[in-house]
Length: 192
Image (cartoon, rainbow, N blue to C red; front, side):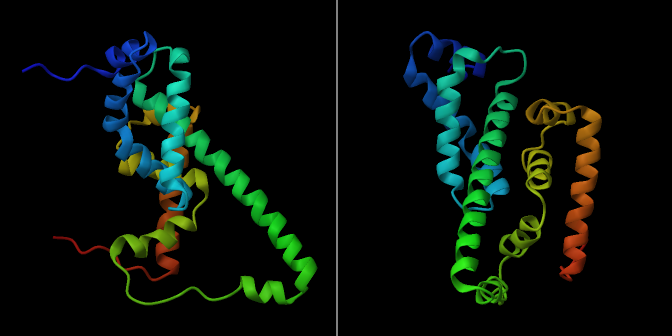
């Protein structure tokens, strides 16, 4: 029984016209890309974003230089795509809030300050507000290192920064996460 072809073999096959071979790439990376999109976008539109990432990657395969690993190249596309979506979302929110303020005056500010819902949540739901309190860059670098277990070098290639910058950003993101957890009195995990 033969093993599955590696990413480079599949990409060469797709570039030569075997579009069906791309399904192997999608199956291989769909969970990872979805997790990255989810960590950056906070769940909103993550599935759509992941699908769009695979479409963008497919359309750009002929430009993949095969110098870095395919996963690093794919994560870079996902990262940039999610940041673009956030920029668009933030522009819409700002425009909507400005229109609402214009229409409702000071009442708009009180609506925006509505308290968050409370109650029992599972561990993932409890961590989500902590992550949402971080910047997009902090969430992305934590996801790439902690969820995807990328090396510093792979993260540097993905984000287009130096390894030293990765270390600094990761240090700051972890500190911001710890501070967010402390400020919300998030319980520390028990040691076994």
